[in-house]
Image 1 (tube, rainbow, N blue to C red):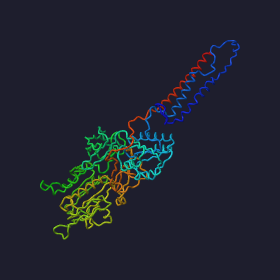
Image 2: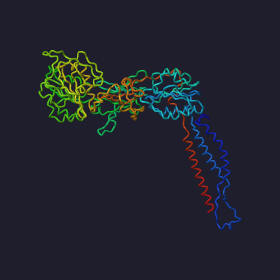
Image 3: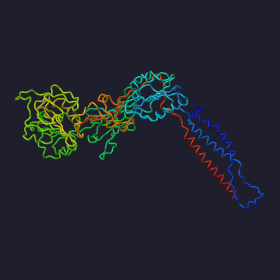
Image 4: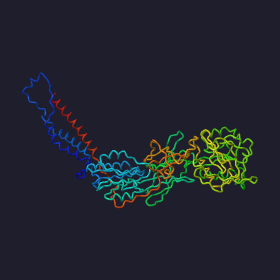
Length: 638
């Protein structure tokens, strides 16, 4: 950049065209307007007369001045003049641009690109090589240094990523080809990231850090019985609202609700606010994402998955036990297990069907053949969970009972009673590809009685939980778009102590989360589950990105959070849908021994557009002046 007083020129070599202005002035001065030939027979009568308005031999001086000024304005405009440009405090040696490219860099990404392009222009005018380090975790090997003009296109095509900023693990290897006298421009997102201090120490020399413009905000889901959102910010001022985006009854995404942040607590410069999600279940189940209003980054977005939806569960059973016999009620333990995480409704089967629940739980109920509405509800996508009991065991037509995942034997099996020879059976470890995968089985959880299933070729495929003797404890089968699930023991402590264990709560929670899931094919049900498949991914700005050639993500990598190859988004593993959200804890970066460029510093007033506009105005005045002169000559001739 060439500085002439308060004006700087980005491309000063164009100013050399100003030397041609005197030559242009002489050419225009020596070339009068071309004469017009008019043939008139009476011209002989005018011989000897003197014309009071002779045709000028030269172009008028004021018209020449307009034309020269217009050309000078064009030359100055193309030279890229800037009024009082921001001083470039970086060194004059080879340039290295370090760009934080995580989600925290997204809100002011255009300003970052513009600042980096100005640095490349400076390096190009000085003839210095340059390199670009994009801190998105995908840079490998030594950084290549090349002419600065070759990096401009790559810089313009860069976009932030939907995970945290990540630096190469080995700074020395990445800088192995760096020339001496390196000048570093670090466009920081204002946050501390692993490896940042090591890179700062390895760079040394002249390092200019450009901090972000405005605060950084992130949004995180806080799981629990009452889910909430946690908003973090690098400023203590009032925070914007959180928008709940979901589908309206017509299936169109729109704003469904606004959540107000509460009081904040500051820790090491980061303010944290808790936002309870106090919305009706019907509204909350339609929400697909939460986002901070006016803040475009993947860290300011929380995608809703199975853990956020609060199912509506209907309990149907005999609950006529007295106050002193409440522990004998088949619905008591179901209430205790489901109440913290679901919305419960109770009543007769016909009444609860009108409330359109997601799950219906039947405790020791028979005679469902005469209720076609229940079958239609399951086929439409409902989840029906049934529990065995004395009434089912005593039925002589149990083999004909509809809406069961397997055929049952009448009479039941007493394996731990006073009249039996056997001992109560424990629960076998759960399969790694089933809905209860990963749940720990207590050693004291035993079953004393159960309903046995009739042998069938598909019995093993429909069994999702077994006892230690390999007999079914829980079976499941698809019906239309819904599911049928049967616990082969009771919902209370009459046949087993499963209902009074913590495992019962976890099993019911897992089953309820699979509600409203389309029936899976046998291949999908038995597919290995160490991988998660992406269904929807975000870009660094928090927008839905195009899903091209999706690759499965290993469960180990999935548990570590968003990363290269696993951006923020929704992923499916078997019947479960889980969200990888980019927002989380934040820590401010510390920059000892560097030059800090003021983020609010004005880059200078670009005069390019003004000068080109002035040139256009002068050319328009030139055209008007030429037309006025031609009209004056016509009047004189008339």
